[in-house]
Amino acid sequence: MKLGLAWEEGMVKGAAMAAWSLPQGKEAFLLQDFSGGSTLEEGWNLADLGAGFLAAPFIGLPYFLQADSLTKFSIHSTERVKPYVTPTENSTKKGEFMTWVTQAIEAIKQGPLQKVVISRTDEKDLPSDFNVMTALEELGSAYPNAFVCALSIPALHGVWMCATPEILVEQNEEGIFRTISLAGTQSGVDLDGSPISPSQARWSQKEIEEQAFVSRYIIDCFKKIRLREYTEVGPKTISTGNLLHLKTEYIVNTKAMDFPQLPGLMLGLLHPTSAVCGTPKQEAIDFISATEKHARSMYSGYLGPVNLMNATYLFVNLRTVEIKENHAVFYAGCGITEDSDPEKEWQETQMKCQTLQRVLMK
Image 1 (cartoon, rainbow, N blue to C red):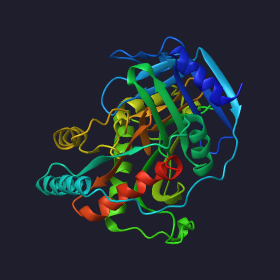
Image 2 (cartoon, helix red, strand yellow):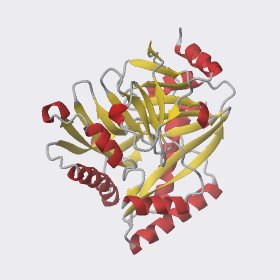
Image 3 (tube, rainbow, N blue to C red):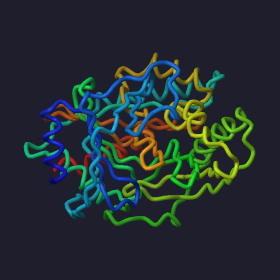
Image 4 (cartoon, one colour):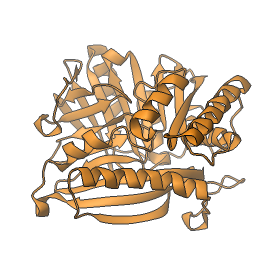
């Protein structure tokens, strides 16, 4: 059975479903929970979950999809991706967003807030021939270094899709744990639409500091659990298709340390990370709640397969879109520090919205 047909049959049956491919993956997976999925209770533990798929909102308890059915499909490459084009500006949304950024800068100057991530939405009507699984394959082809996913849970009343480069918690079958610090953003294509080499990137002090906040946050989490044996790689510039970012990678051999509970402990400490929330965490959450006029829902939460084939891969839900019938709500955000420029932050969200729009909006 083809992936698209299996997805459509699951929709008819009211199953909760996740279809995904991992970065540099050669295969796509479709997981179905015929009960419709469940919301985990307070005090849940990653190690106690069975094989399945986890999807958490920015704030709140995660949904868990048990693997009643897990099917593997070959990935078909496609060349239908449009080049980057400057999107049309919505003056109302731009003015509102820049006001939020200005308010954030003022709050940071007053302290104790040091960094806060402000997000916005961009709403579009999808083409009449839009198909979720076709779009998923095209996202995978356009962004081979990203985790691409389509998620349908009846309780969400829609489909969420993402092409995210950001690992939150990963542990492979060999017991190697990874998490990353990913922040700082600039265009990955030039004015002609040609890719820019990561070696050509030049980062401002503001972008370097923004990424350093995330790195320090991860190291602070390690300190809380008294973890001292880890490998740090970076920061270095990486390409995620149409964007360049600064990335630092943190690696732990949990088998060598006899520390199998590390992924669950770090998940509880990390989310929501400084990369999607801010520093200090609670002050940033409070500012976001008081400022943003939209509900983030699953945007800047996390999602991915857990305890499947002795491995867990959870990614921050970025470069994401919420789809209800033919209407799409794209989400994008950026880290605000004292040195932020509201106009540049707006342009950054424009580029981030383009990650999915250049594939989905044909």
